[in-house]
Image (cartoon, rainbow, N blue to C red; front, side, top):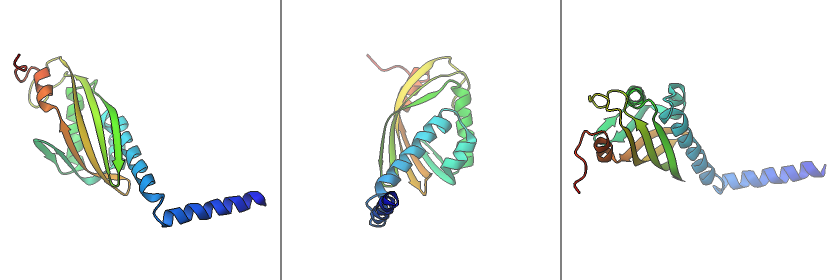
Length: 166
């Protein structure tokens, strides 16, 4: 009987915290962080389209200058092409920061160019570059992604731009 009273008191406290907003923001940010972690583990690194359907909304907006994608279907097509260009690709998340409906990921990319990339034949070169992605989530799903990456360094490593001057 004592255990059930303790359980009832604990439940009342948790409910009170939830209704006053003391638990909700932190748990929402943690939930969003888990979604973004799964995004990198299953979608970015493995192009698992079933996971993409679970994590992102159909009218997803991806801003990755100079490009912009305005649907999950288009994003899936571009990710398939990216995986064909870099079949051994790996995004390593260095840091995740979550607050409210936003999650920021700082990441490092590694991969070998074995397929056509941006209309250019494969170079066989291995590249390493960094970037950040900012995600906006709602109801546990990704609605927008802004990517800022070292595109210039990527193109230099592929030999598609001249190396930096010494």
